[in-house]
Length: 380
Image (cartoon, rainbow, N blue to C red; front, side, top):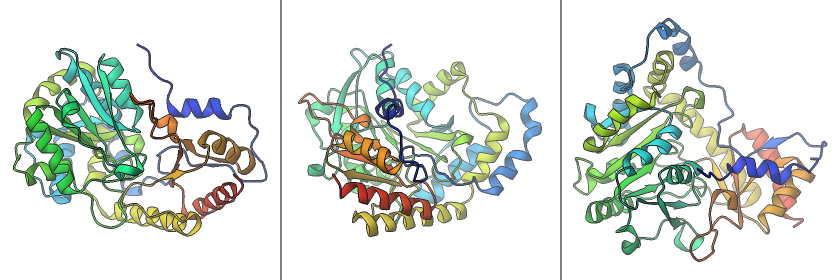
């Protein structure tokens, strides 16, 4: 298999010969990893459950975790899931990589479509599945929302959406998500929405594809799946706790597949994750910090506050050169958008004129970095 280097590897290569300005404190706004301490009650739950290390974890997950995840979905999205409609996963990166391989294995000439720019695991899964890839470009012209091309979609076996979107911070309304559900039923493709940023919103709660499915009358979630994670919402990426939920028929076969994969979460991690999924107060506190960071970005860079995520998708002149200059002169790292996207059949890379800025530090550090970014922008 021939996998593309990860975006952060490309960034390291881009900056490897540059000595950053030591007059400034280093600031890395590249990776979507919250730089806040995992809430104490989650750490305590982990410490109090270490005796469970003596036991093998179930592939299907312990009932404590499954119940907490179903309750989260019920409270947050108003959707009541049956036992066979949700599977706990070891984060979402592993499921995004191995689920397409499972689902596409028996397909003749497998075809997958996903948003472009994208989370690189989607591309890795397509490569591992020997699947043809079709891109749903996100551009200013379409409001960073995928344009519906039914002829293209009719050729797909699997379509992966990512809303709220990484890296553009765009979102789809309940009605827009509902239209995608209708398309999945009409053209009989599997629709999966990566909802890992659903809880990092700045105003109103963000809708789920599960809600949209019920909204358009598909209460059984036929051809519909979502994934979610506590990595962003709970500042706990190390817990590796996520889930995949929706179409029970598809999940039944995938559950059997997972017994062979061997990616069950250790029991202490499951206990801590159950505590995290069951609490909302700590998430509200995190959202408040991210919103403050966006307010600083609006004040300093003049950008609009997005409705979700903790990213700024900033248009800049010559993104690669800007990234190098920003690091060399101001000791700030950002991620060039073209590393997160690919050229389509028309030779267009929709990330080429952008950089992604992750506002994952405390507001004081973010403010300092944003001021340096503004100064650098004034000089290019």
